[in-house]
Length: 427
Image (cartoon, rainbow, N blue to C red; front, top):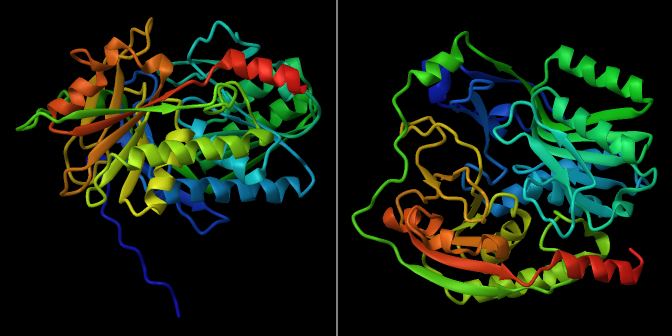
């Protein structure tokens, strides 16, 4: 018996502007339309945006589905590398910091590290690379020690989507200078490269004398209409920061965190950190759950690169019986349009909470269909500033829309303590 045909509505950006994401191939049974929807942004270098349905960034997603996508991607990596590879994993900021951690966890990787755009002077950067089409192009790598990434173990580079492969190749070049190794794997939810992009990656591999494999949940192509940048520029200005009939409330929970346990992969997450990390996540989720109404839906919103820890909190809350979706804030200024078939129906622009950051931040959608969900915002200590609560801050714009917010502040994680603990343990 054949499977029923899935009939999808034509996406708004396809119907009105001709922007199309076409499925080509898959080894997983998942298709490009399963995984991404066409979105827009006003960017002179790239006006289209692949809005992932399983990443937990722009769209609120089931935390179980987000983790399952990472698990499937990790399994594809394992199939390529074999059982004894013992790889290290690098996730790309900001969108793939959580996805990369999911892949690393599935592989039981020796070390996971994600690139970062946050400057942490007490750690410093040992390498960096550029992302050409991004709104924020510079990536830093800030492990507590460069030794975490030494050796000839395969390196797995994880991103949510591969458009050209140029960012991954730039990262490989930068890391290869510090520590040459023989094998790399580029892993992504969707691979949208044209053949010339694939040829460029092969040429880089030949130049470096290495093997570069690629795996993805689905392969597709992006069909860009002529004049898309101008067409997006001609659309009405987006309406951001909606105002509700009532103001929402704010409640706060301080979520203590062990000083020498990483709260993510910014400074390197070792396989040996898993048990203590899981225990700290369970404790944080319990503290938040005690302040939530079990009958009310919950949207857990992480902060930019802090994706994996809030995702895991969302997973625990879901397992405890709450109706939960997960997403995070972002630096990405996407185009918002409240029209059926367009994924970014609602948007908020707010002041970056970290001191010294001047560019605005964004969160999209952050709502539950037909119900007034409570938003559980999970941040770390550097984002716990007066800017968070001031006029134009994240809490201000969310509550102005009528959203009730439960703020969870993860405090106590200290990169200096983490470095000292690892030095003492010989890691």
